[in-house]
Image: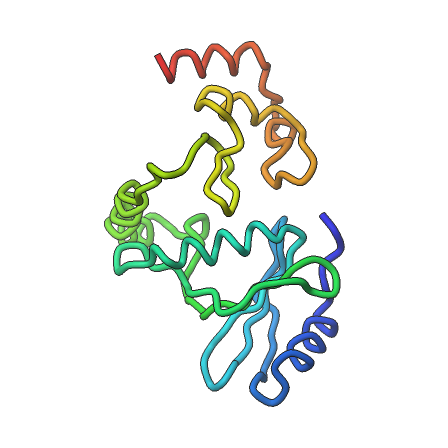
Length: 186
């Protein structure tokens, strides 16, 4: 991943872009693909994320169009080129990562999580083609579901999930993966 903007650079970017409309930039966190900062824009809570892949932010914008009470997706107010990489400004949504929940927390969120999965399953993708990682135009990265499953062992430039298998404690044997895929799609 390209080096992401520092907090000082992010602050400068926000001030240059929004002037006095923006204030109180604070670090939210960083993942493998982006760094996020909370700030106030026009009196409303917002988040700016900086990352190396423009498609991620374009897809966030698309998915915000499917937001519903069962599938709350923050609206993306703006996205585009940043000094190094790309940025997206979204409304802020508060929450806790599923990995950080204890048993009681998981039991509490499980009904809404299942409702969100149902809402995702109800999204009409019939106009799209392909399987696997999708592009903002709706096209999947592979011609079949088995090809998409087998691709986790491949390293491809510019695909964020690329090389997934090499990050596992025990690398996936391509022959074993092919057998699993044949069983799943049979």
